[in-house]
Length: 354
Image (cartoon, rainbow, N blue to C red; front, side):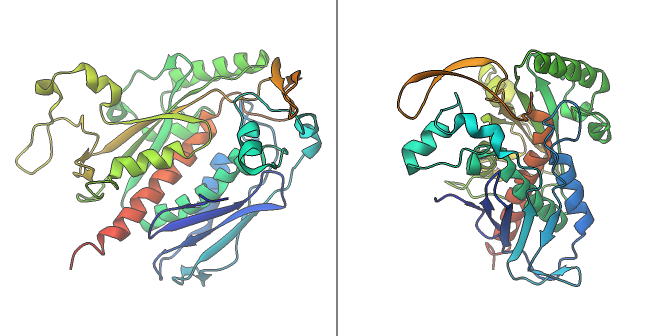
């Protein structure tokens, strides 16, 4: 299986399955001498882990990270950083009913077609549990780029949308509610809606918005490795993501150029920021902001028609422990992937000038 690594200089490779003994990763390219606060990495994992509130999956996993290499006396050594997160609460029997059955909108069918074999226990390698490894690497990347501020939050659940712009929000409120929406009134509506959807045995999607502040000018390469292209790849690699837009996004298509152009101030900043902090694929020093769209979780607690490995029509119902809405737990994952992209480009920039 290819495609298990992300990044060019600051590089993450992950391994493991949802119901195996453990998941883990190797972070390569991290400079030596960086003082690492392990507790901050664990805090980020705690934000992603299951069972943290009534509106997420109730799988109980401590998600405690163990580092095996690359750190000595609290600092990075410049060698590969190896880590493991042990799986503690597998219930593989919950998936015995899909051993030979393909769940609609899951990776079951495509994995069988591509590899001829699949780990049906929780989706195996296709499970979103793999994203815990990204959170570890992203938390470490955040410490490498500590002057850059990355804030993600839930901007919509179903048709309930946050009406405030990102520059009108107090990001300190994001972690004060289980939905991770920095507007308490909107968060309350979202939480009630998710609970209603769950009671009906159904699921719902939503969007996560991310804002990156204090980004230096000059990150990104102007042709195939544009900064927004790499951010798009990073976000679209997250399970259940169906869309990515930055800056004015699709709304910008409705505007005229005379209204859409970001006019300059004398210091090089711009009066507006419809470019989303990126022009020509390169950061311009303004805030980078983007939206990530997540589909409804594919496993629902309702009967659905599907097929089995013999091509026969069968009926199945979802079992096990699943999120009715993935977006609250996706917030730290979005931040982690953004941090990996920015850290990688910062290190690339150090080698682009003599």
